[in-house]
Length: 267
Image (tube, rainbow, N blue to C red):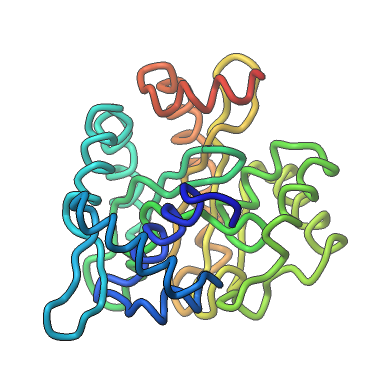
């Protein structure tokens, strides 16, 4: 990492994934940074109030001040306020987890959620909120990539690789397999993934499109356990999901968060 700013935000992003905190050594090793420099940056983050140090273990973790910034921004951007009724409606119909992602710097960030499963197995990955969707293996990523031409889609997917350490057994193994899935997604109008993003989980997603030029600015997805959320179930929900995505696209100008995505697509 070339700058202090890069290293500082890398520390914050890492700590956001570990609520219990990490030691200086663990942070330095994970980010491939010198322990002395890591300790110095952590000290500065403690002074600003965004990181705290456990008095007993000595581990460092994010404070609620860091979380409050994101929550404040989402509240003022109105994106959750205007989209939540649609997410809730789909969740109640599907009886599964529904999530909203928006485009930010050529990546998809999950920012909205509604849980429709009230009994039995529940897919409820709260840690995914605020995280970037893996483009090649997730339903959200596949849906958004389908709005691009093949060259652009492959270029963006290749940056993060076709699989991750936590990908499911059916994650795409290369460009040819990804292109085949993109073709199916475009023909269908929404993506379907079977144990691709994660073992034991299936999902579907529809792209949210620019209200003027049709370019993808986000996605709405439904996810559930593979023992219950079958492909036939997803196909039955397909028209409803695409209708919800169309409604969300029409709302895009009402939120600054969406407007930034619109602007980036227009550039």
